[in-house]
Length: 156
Image 1 (cartoon, one colour):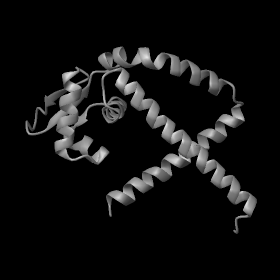
Image 2: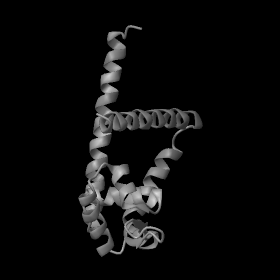
Image 3: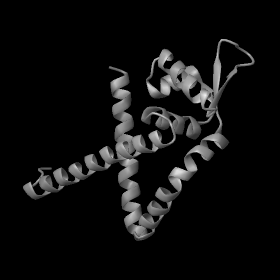
Image 4: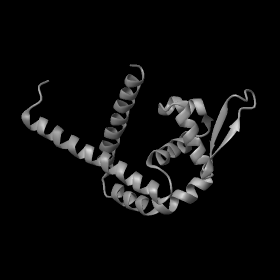
């Protein structure tokens, strides 16, 4: 199906807004991270660890694409701040389990996120149910495309 000039302009405008959203999100998370004494990357990886729950260092390496050496540094920094802890696997002491300390992470991050969460809740509440469904469809589809891209790049 051929894309009309008007449709192409809409797609380009949407991509521009999407890039602005992505860039602003990165900058905001960097600012949040600095506020709580983390790097932007450590802040986002901590979020992944909290979301996914305890996992091996190797599992975190596979999930993130970071080398095992980079994972060691990440865990060292997060452990120093008492945001995660290492535990040896009972069956195989060569394996290290990374366990998130959700309580400490919440103590650190909640004060910074409270205002943001309130504003985003108000924003979402301003949309109709139908608009929210469209947004959900977009984000879920975009996540799927991004995950496909990650896998393609990993397997290159």
